[in-house]
Length: 351
Image (tube, rainbow, N blue to C red):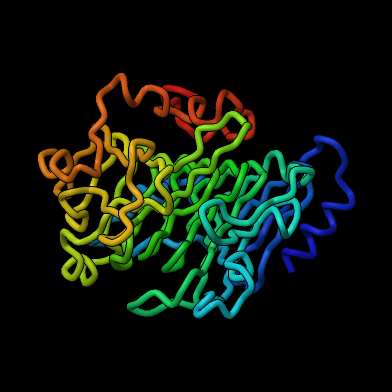
């Protein structure tokens, strides 16, 4: 239903004109694919913007996770490689071609052809939950994307991304921004090659497996600050039952390869976070060297232990000067922030 609307706009919009789709409250079971370069905005109908009830800001382990009135569902997981690639599990995929969105395997992933065009230059979603329902259980059943962004710019505002493993995938040359959004998962649920900035949001822990983040850097001639940056956000157990089972067990991340880059900045770390912060990929294959950046800056909360982080020889505790190159979206997206909706940021310092 919504895919038909996306396809219709793709043929009727030209140049830089933005297409808008207003989605009525309801549950929609479908996969969405955005391939065209023209700007596109999906607006989930909601009373929340008018009542100033922020989605992520109302989340604690003592209250139910707030849900948007627009729900887009799919159910698929790449258990035992039943699909050719993880992308086929996704609820929403933003990217110009199938090849551009593939995860692939090995140190550098799928070799996206050099002549692949850039996709949507300005995709936005508001007040929508994207839920991969396959793993609604107490363990991960394999990669199961809620959202994937590759070779495109995408912003999510007061949305929800729900799965268990690999909830969010940001592929090569993908740029993704999240504001007042809940991202829920258990295993490596923020992963990819591209650049993601998560702000004033909640990372909701449904369990502990691997790490919260798992990034894979690649050598490229294109200027970039690939990685995932979590700022002014909260890391919380999904509910009190989960909280009691995972106290002190959840790693902030682990290196998908040794060029992993992620930073938790000015963020609250709940009691579920392991004192050491980050961990190695495995004992046999640590994937940590001088290129690896797994760090915190100005973190706080019961899950933050500066002494343990420094003593881990894995987690780096940054000072003000060291964090400066990554502090705001304008820094990590190299000044290209025109696709980010500034109007929802409530006067926050920095672009």
